[in-house]
Length: 223
Image (cartoon, rainbow, N blue to C red; front, side):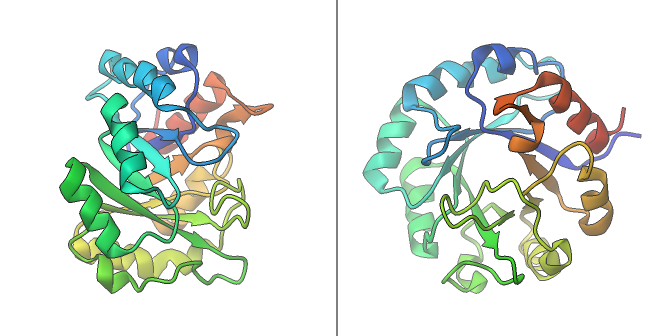
């Protein structure tokens, strides 16, 4: 039986790897513009985004740009070259900034929050301010260097209030952080998020591994 849980594969950099994925039921493809070993430039993203229209399974995945505390001019420069569907913000972006981005560029906004080791959220803004502003809420594991993308899991049981909030807002709730083919079914069983987000968990030696991507998608969607 096919699961309705959305799959987001993040940190794509290679045309060849992306082309090898077009037969898989993937809902979101993430391109990292923030400082990271998976960082891409606007020019690289502009080369990768058209491949999403070659998808042969269902509808084309939505393109997601991952950024940390960008400025409006930076976003303007990126979006002029790489027409992203969604901007995923991983920093301390305020509700007002998120609203400005939506109004200026007509994109959807996913706001990422980072969960620290003690289960608290590394974020200054109360969630209430984002009501009616964001289109998705993503929980990731806090990383002091990059903010997220640590490749470690967080205490999943801590996510329930955030999932409930997202449900009340009728927006998507996604879980990330240390997911891989071996634990994603446990996460779904525990938390039942609307979507799951993976990056390093489908890599071998820092490079996206199509066999791991296939295994991850199969575990989420069902064979």
